[in-house]
Structure formats: C-alpha cells, structure tokens
Image (cartoon, rainbow, N blue to C red; front, side, top):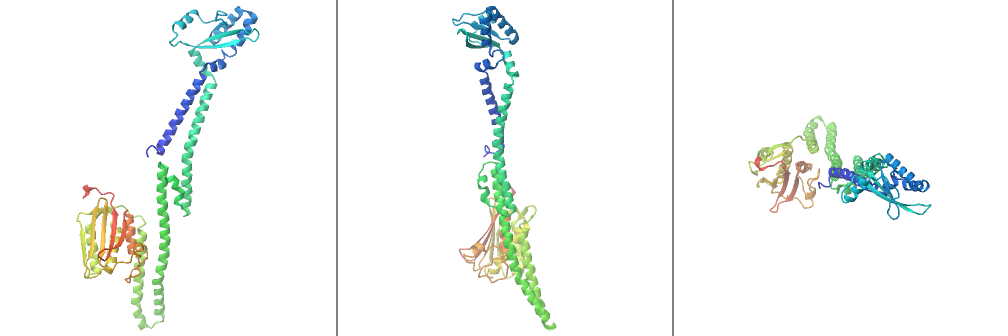
Length: 446
C-alpha cells in the first residue's frame, strides 16, 4: 500500500526520470567517445589523412613533415604516418621518449588518447597508417566546447523528462477528471457509484479519495431520498389533523353557543396531536444536523431518569433495570435519551401490567448494547424490516402514534456508529436492541 502511494509514485517517477536521463547521457558519452566518432568530428583529425597524402605526394617528405609540425602547433596532436610495411614515412611529431614510454607502459594508463586510421591514396594506390596521440585535457576540452555535446544532453534530458512528466500527469489528471465529473453528477443528484468503481480500486491516495467520495455520495443520495420520502410522508400525515381541525372549526362556526363550548376540548386535542407530530418530525430532522461534541454518558443514571419519567405516564407498569453502575460511553446524551425513551414508550404501549418491562445494558469491547424487552404480542415477520421507517405502523397496531419513535431511535444509533435491531423474543414479546460504537473506550477509563 505504501509503495503504491501517490507520494512514492511521484518521487519514484522523478528519480527514475533523472536516472534515465543520466543513463542515456552516459550511453551518449560512450558513443561519442568511440574512435570513429572522434576521427570524423574532431577538427584536427577530420580530412587530415586526405590532405596530408595529397601534400606528401605533390611536395615531398619535407613539406609533409612541416605540415605535421604546423598541425601540432595548432591542435596539440602528435601524428605518426607509417607505410604498408610499418616503416615511418616521415619523422612525425610523436617524440621518441613518448614512444618509448608507450612501449614500456603498455598496460598502464597514459596521458593521451591513441587513435589510428588507414588511408589509401586515390592517385598512387598506396596505403598509409595514421596514428594520433591526443592529450586527454585537450580532448575533454574539445568535448565541452563542442556544440553537439550540450545540445545532445539537453535534448535527451528534455525528452526523458517530458515523457515521464506526461505519464505522471496523465496518471493524476485522468482520475481527477473522473472525480470532477462525479462531483458534477452529485451536484445534479444524478450520481452513480459505478462511475468511480474502477478508480476506487487504485491503491493510492486517489483510490482512497474515490472510496471516501463513494461513501459520501451514497450517504448524500440516501439523505436526499430519505428527505424526499420524509417530506412526502409528512405532507400525508399532516393532512389528517389539519382536516379534522378544519371540520371542527366549521362545526364550531355553525353550532350554537351552548354546543360550541363542548367542541373546544376537541379542538385542543387536535392541536396537541398536531404539535406532537411536528415535534417528532423536528426531532427526527435534528438527528441529521450538527449535535456538538460527544460527552461521557453514565448509562445507569440515564436509565434511572428514564424509568422515573416513565412511571409518571404509566404508574401501573414495572421496569426492571439490569445495568452495571460503571457502564459509560462517549456520545450525545440528549440524542441517546430520546432514542431509549422512544423505545421504552413504545414497549409500554404493549407490555401487560402484570409483567415487568426489562431493560439491560452491557459492554463488549468497544460496543455498548442496550436491550428493551416487553412481554406484549410482538409483531409479524413481514412488519419487522420496516418498523424503523418513518411513519410506518404495523398492521395490528391500534395504539396512538405516528411511527416516528423507532425511526428516531434508529437514526440516533446510526449517529453513534451503531444499529437498531428489532425482533420478536423466542419466549414471547418484542425486543429492541441498540448497539452503539464507543471507539474512544479504553479499559483504564472504567
């Protein structure tokens, strides 16, 4: 994973380009260091055999020797010319002491470069062997001042860097263009997760970004769909109390003063129902907003407070708590309190008075589980998967409610990184299980 990181890819591309340019430059320098290349390009060697042979055959040995001496003064190159049988044609400019040194130190490096080439006269048909001795400082100086050398190095560096830069740029800009297209689709609420499926399989920062973007896109899409469904369901649910209020107001306008007084409790009841419904809708909507920082929650204290509140509305019900006093978790107290309160209120509607309502909570590593069990009739298997959807009510439910309590509890569990599980107990009754993630848990805290 680390080796496939975009950071290492950029760094590796940079150094690979540098090493490639250096390697190609070394190959070029090796090519330019070949004898044939030097003989054909060096100004002191180029066409020298042709000119010397012509001079020698027309003017004689003395003139040819003088030509070699002038050539040495100009280019600092010693020249020997041998005939076909290996004898010197002229004395040449290579000193005898240097020839002796070259003979004795044949296996050791010498301070000059020795080159040889053969030339055949077109006029006489005689062959001559030209042996050159170029001092290394002069040869290197010629290389540095030759226009071909820096131009060749510059061209190689530009080509290599351009090639690697193009590959690196394409490997970055293409995924970014796909991400930009996905952002554009997301802005139009037309985002498709498959559009980044290939990019999300990359094992670098862009792949991780695509994975995060996929999760964000799925979350936003689900929120948009959820909000649309919520708006549709809210519109449907608000029609009933508003219609009843409108009917009650119409009847009150036509009723006599004596009968009108009996209708006020009906109007107040409908207003209370409408206020309760709007309050639950707002509570559900707040769960998707910013709820502030997490704080430490003592679960037992929270449960005891909720049991005390439940005893006021259902004094004939008995609630059993099985919670450890040191059970704590980091979360949002108001959100968790509303979630468990909705589970308790939902259970109290169906739990018989002669059986206790059971609430238990325990920890398993970083997970905190809260169970709320009643001993009521339970629900059908067909209704279980949809019970936590907003405004959904089971077919056999006759108690008042708007189907938002379990939806609020599920949303609160999701905000805590957990889930809400609804099931029928094997021994009868209904069980709602909140599983909450407490990632900041450490054993030392307890």
